[in-house]
Length: 415
Image (cartoon, rainbow, N blue to C red; front, side, top):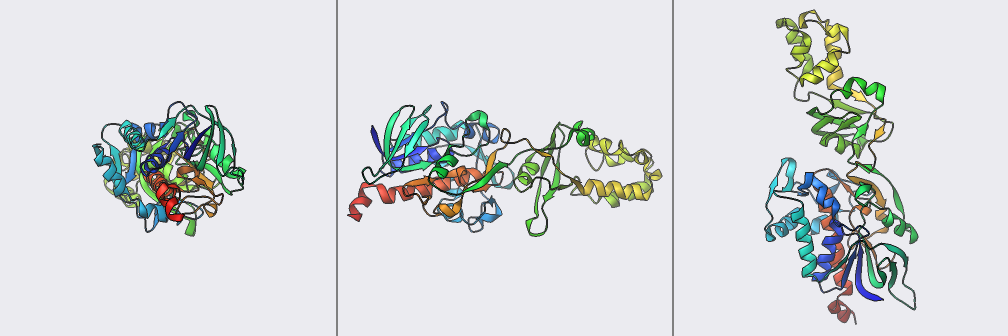
């Protein structure tokens, strides 16, 4: 049976980063993952270029960009390991990157650059990595044996500290697993119900039929959901699909959308449609559809006009009531999704290990020696690099705590 200071389960963003940091702080670290190919979520992220952080993250007010039953939980870790800290590491490894809009940072070349960097950090820390290694069972420390005992598909091992970094349920085809939640339950830790986040929304076939033909059309919109204090709003791009709506705006709002409730879209947020259509009525001899196509994409204009015979005339011939109804429909399009594309298309998992049972300083749970980092905790970021920054920050907080409690120097000081 092999013995370790730290065993980390889950070789994704949080697990890899924590392993490298802990190893470089003098700890004997084993990183295991049940998949043969590690870091798949990094590999496919950002269209293959990994949106690895966001410059606009405000650690003093994380509730702006993170969803949790306690949105302030992540503040401590995020303030101690900032986007600039990770940028410094990326630059140290000579990785070229660029900023897209709203503070989003992407690799110039490939997400593989980030994976190679994390593996190099693990090598520097003497970390041993075992892929294709699944945990069959686990026993908590006892008075006779103060370490966790793990039976794996590659043999037995024991460890002083166990770190769960297995992510969530999203994208099962790359190895998503509920193992982290099961371990939390095994030790009596509370869970917040999980559901897909950052996911396309779907609509009923018949009701959606007039808009299915718009699949592939993208445009900037204003999108919102919720009422009063629960209202959430984004100005982002929208993408029509055969089954519903996607694109950054919809992915963002999906994390706040509650099943059975509507979303509202302004399909021309930069335009006063009522004024522009009334102006066209006074001056234009063109068909209303042609005038509308100067204000919104042509395919969208055609889809709307084709549903109402009163709109299939010249602008001058369309009644004021019909014009106002059209302007209102396009700027306040209220529709209720029938569901979402689920975990198979979700970028993240909402919910997870309840933050009430985890230290915001150390990521250690109420079960001594058992830590949780990354997506498995009830902390979910917005689209745009925020979830990766939570992975780096929570991993860093955990590694610092492990080094403080387990390194030979700290143990000698305690003695």
